[in-house]
Amino acid sequence: MPAFPFRALLFDLDGTLLQVEMRHFISRYVAGFHARCCDLVDLDPLQRAMRAAIHLLLQTETEGPTNEDRFFAFLAERLQLDESVLRERFALYLANDLESLSGGVRPIPEVGPLLELCLQSGVPLALATNPVFPRALTEARCRWVGIDIASFSHLTYFENSHYCKPQGGYFLEVATELGVEPESCLMIGNDTSHDLSANQVGMTTWLLDPFLLEREGPSWKPDHRGNHQQLHDFISAQIGD
Image (cartoon, rainbow, N blue to C red):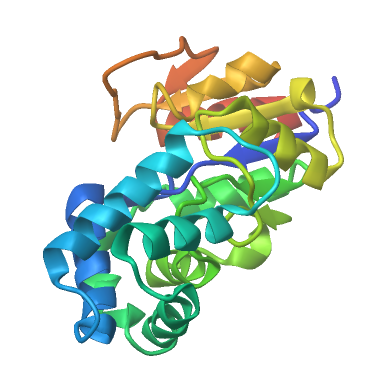
């Protein structure tokens, strides 16, 4: 029996392990934060500033500050507000109000058996969701659809990440955290730009296409493609299940 060909499996979250309409979800996310700081800023400028901050994280590859620090520094400058006050209000939002967003995500039935099978491979799994959101929201999205975060050896969120997809630095950072070479990883996701850009650092890619996302601009060709059951069958064949 040949050895399992990968040393780590990386999974995107939104559109891969759960269903979400991200544009609506972000609007509700921003509105929830605004309820905690409506005495400081109107909704429209906050919404525009937060979307611009996320765009900055996605488009600008830099070394040094975490995504969290870059996010709040940008917001404070754009809105001319004290960064410490913004962070304090945001912490209150995360601690008290996130459950209002739970209706915006739905489970994918095939995900539970797929993750159980992947754990049988004996290699670490990473939740490689784009780290533009805080840890609390990443973990909450998993909880709302019944995904056990203990399945993952590493999760990316804006507090622990310095890059975003589609930047090559993002995938190299995840591989380093897992202690593996990028060439030994399989990146699984539904986004032909953000997820499949793992190819640029030598990762093998699987395009999960039931909730396919194709953006304007550069896209990458997957090494493998199919639905959740086809991915399940592929992994099963590799581990001899």
